[in-house]
Image (cartoon, rainbow, N blue to C red; front, side, top):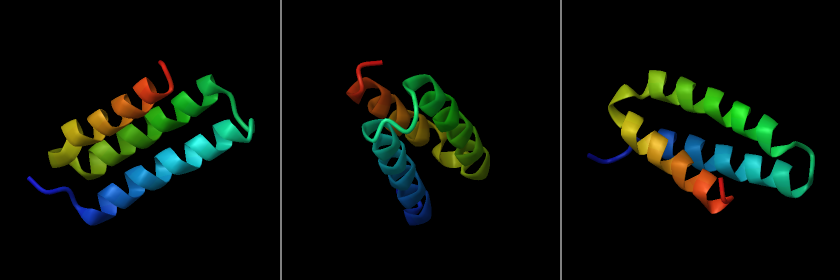
Length: 67
């Protein structure tokens, strides 16, 4: 199943923006994770057929950061 391009863009932007905030020390890891979890819930509700893909993208993001 191919992923909706708008969904892929939203996920990429969320990860990039969150990484930028973390790198610039404008947020803590805990606050960033809570925000990302809210985004995940919203995206899964909006794109239920792609819920597994969405979860995998953010799980990979957390692993990349060692969490």
